[in-house]
Image 1 (cartoon, rainbow, N blue to C red):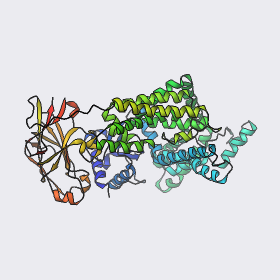
Image 2: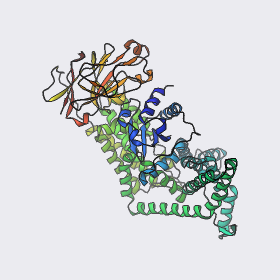
Image 3: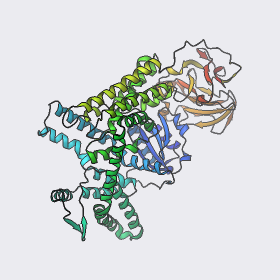
Image 4: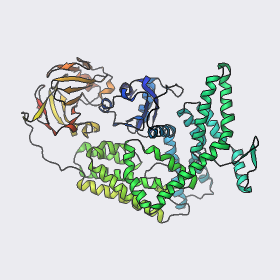
Length: 618
């Protein structure tokens, strides 16, 4: 219930339930595949304080929520009536090949992102425990924890069979059964026997079978799942309804499993090896250059949600070589943004900025950099650049040191434990540590010294608008509050635009200029206007008042209405909002402030509706 209002807002801005082809979530963002992207209102959704950022990339409409993304995802599903068994309409597959590839990869891997990261962390901690002498590989404790950490990777074909089946629109239990066949003990025994004899000793209908150990593999089961889902659609199409529920799955497993062992598996394994060896050849050619490039660009990929394209490559490296050099390079990229955020924390005197930086540092250490990037480093620009530059420097050192990981996870502080070689600590681990420390310290120092604009003492506000600027009048009576003092990090950071806030003295909101109503939230707590002078204004009554579901608010205009300065827009019950425990601070944001030369507060400490509030330079 806590996120019901936010879920309604998100649904309305993505074009409603009928426009959703699929919905998954990763660590911080909702990932929508929409039938018609043009129906989505990204700008309107960005204005919601519960949304950090909206990104349209890789054929997906991505809504960045933060650490509570799972709760919001569940609320959106509940509000839209979506379940795991809900059939969804086919979307538009006319996007770019790269975009469709990213959508497929993220759709297959994101459902189990949490356990994937947890398994990698546990493997790294076990390696650390063995090196420190706390456990031995022969002890029962180690074996049980190792089984817990390794089960997901060993039975990858089962897990990927399920998620790939769902992504390709088939019965996920059929494709999971196919994955189970690939890791069945009989097949593994046949593989081991073939390895021992050095010859092909089994056939299928007279055709020789080359058995391969598919445990931990990625590409074979994904291709097999696609084939199975295609067969399933043909079976459901041509078979009579009275028999298709039994015979369609029969045909799928009876055809796809042997086809995988005979054709799909060997070809996919060859592709996997070619991919791994191709990456290794590029990496070997100039490890430091590969490290610098990945260290600099990783966070850019994260911003656009394109980083999922590299996840199968890292897993494939581990499956083919038993180790991976890409993941260690990405850790300095993460710590570069953490260091930049630490520099902001140490330098800024802004209480709200310092609080946001503190929480973002904690999240960044565990690999979640979106709060730091979207909330601080990217809006301030220079810290983000410094973080990427430091990530490049650290990545170059890690690449030059030939550092590896020996289990999969996501780049965070626990990755250092996953970098411990099986034979014990060596120079590759120390090189990785040095690269990470350099990225962290360098970005922190650069940001502390030159990452934030110099603080200037603001002149006393004037009550006359400069002749060269356009006026935005006060939309309500009350006390003026600097935007960075608003108790909401999204507004205080300036992410949504420059402006000011008013603590209202009564319950009326009037138009600040002549223009048109361009947006009105269903909960009536916020309204967007476009002035005849081209200025876009968002008026958001209170903080988190979206949770009140519109009860204290009354709208006197509709979207598309023309208004003139002083026209009544909204009324609200001031006392009811206070009694419900919500802050009344009302941000007045120039949402297209980047299009102007500057936004200046011209009101004194208190203001009356209709008095000059902001001056927007042309």
